[in-house]
Image 1 (cartoon, rainbow, N blue to C red):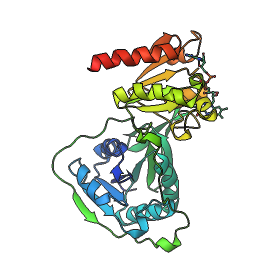
Image 2 (cartoon, rainbow, N blue to C red):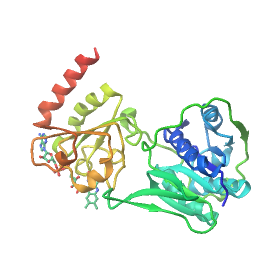
Image 3 (tube, helix red, strand yellow):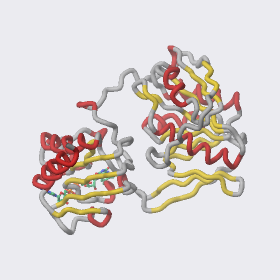
Image 4 (cartoon, rainbow, N blue to C red):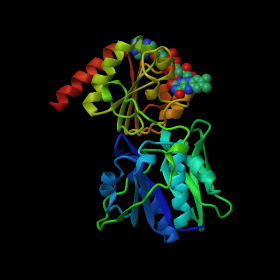
Length: 327
Ligand SMILES: Cc1cc2nc3c(=O)[nH]c(=O)nc-3n(C[C@H](O)[C@H](O)[C@H](O)COP(=O)(O)OP(=O)(O)OC[C@H]3O[C@@H](n4cnc5c(N)ncnc54)[C@H](O)[C@@H]3O)c2cc1C
């Protein structure tokens, strides 16, 4: 197995995902022990522009792959690019974000090179010369530690917001354009359009602050109240599945086992009971604030701060007080 690490620099809507700098930091943990180098590959529209943004973050070289066949995301096309780079350069490890794209791409790329796939990890390290990847199981109640067997490259997807991002370390990386080698006509499914959420709000998986609403929001228009509070932090708005199922909020902002896994600095849960499936998506938030009128709601067992009260009274007061503080 090679000792070098390849970081997949995911680009969405022409911009590099925040998780990429976290992946660079995770890669440095591996190469700190293996003595290898960390490289990155950026694929698709915007790759060239974004590559210069991570030059100087300790990367040896950055491959830029941006031609018509890979301008838009397809799991087949992008997996072919990753697989051929791994084959050519002999990478031992490939890191990607456990994002929608990373979850789709990783297993397919790993299968193409007979590699191992460890999904949704929160930590990687080298222990006694062997890679150890840690990932939560049973909705975050337990962790397992995985070690690969065999000689194949190890693909690891890492949850966003778990690892402190790499900082600039000076110097610059070699940036080289590469053809994709992909035949667009042979690709059977391509992402031709990404429709942003109404209002263009921040992505829940990347936001530092999330204000979430549950069934208690009663109707879609009441989410404006949460948006107002979230805006004061430049934060995102999330929702429980009950709120999504009731049509109060859109599915892409659902937090939980069948929604997004988030890890913000601050999570404010408004009228959310704290069901295990919701906790599975937000229990690792650094600070959890719960607002619930039922003092025995399970969310209070996980919350660092709890407010027992009616959210329709508490949220406007919180918003008003914060506005005063920020003036
Ligand atoms: C396989 C499976 C997967 C699931 N995946 C998810 C998932 O990804 N995400 C998820 O969230 N759920 C998921 N669920 C559903 C989960 O079990 C719960 O049903 C759901 O989380 C409940 O949402 P809620 O807390 O908004 O609603 P409820 O459980 O009904 O809680 C509403 C809360 O609001 C409080 N409240 C009511 N009025 C007010 C008020 N005016 N002010 C303050 N508080 C008030 C109540 O006291 C109550 O605690 C899943 C379930 C299954 C079976």
